[in-house]
Image (cartoon, rainbow, N blue to C red; front, side):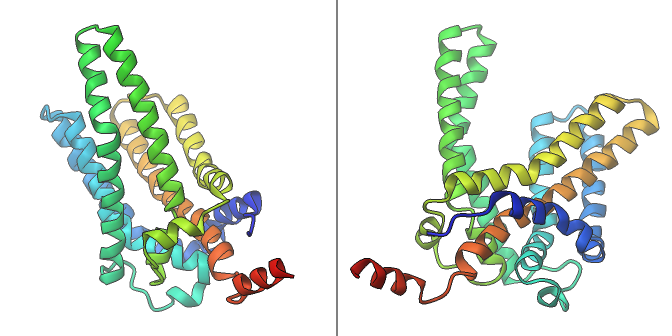
Length: 261
């Protein structure tokens, strides 16, 4: 079994935007511009008393749709380097992108199924000041989130495999992460943490509800951080490369021979 080198992979993931800055601008520029438009529309809907939950869902859907081509391209870049995306258009949907978007949709629907009922029950308990319901719902919610997190990490290789057109199926993806779940989870979390920290620092410096132009600037910075955080997909993509692609094809046979001897 190959043990993932956590910190070298995280460092490489965080360094890719600087190493491939032209590719980042080329393939991330259009999704970033479009997500700014979507954010402006969401802001206008909120001012018209639209539900924040509804606008939040719409923004999440917009993000997945707009950044799927970039996610595919960035995963390919992390795994194979510049030659793999040399002819890729800046923003386009093909069969690979649609399959990647479908996998993302299945992931989000699974999350809603796992934690949705307990979240609704928790909300009901809060509205009715029922502590027993709140405690039970909170416990179920935490358990559901843990269950989803484990499933997400175990199936994390589905996404880079789809991006490079080597998707082997859910069962194979599950087996590929066996024995590395803690290391892979650490890679995923540590790849995203810097962007979260920067976001919280900006909130502290600018304020949660700045006025006028400051609000627009903060919104642009928030969307820029969302776009940059998408580059953290390189973390699991690089882990996939180490475990699946860099392993010699005859490694299982050699291991079996060694065990018999």
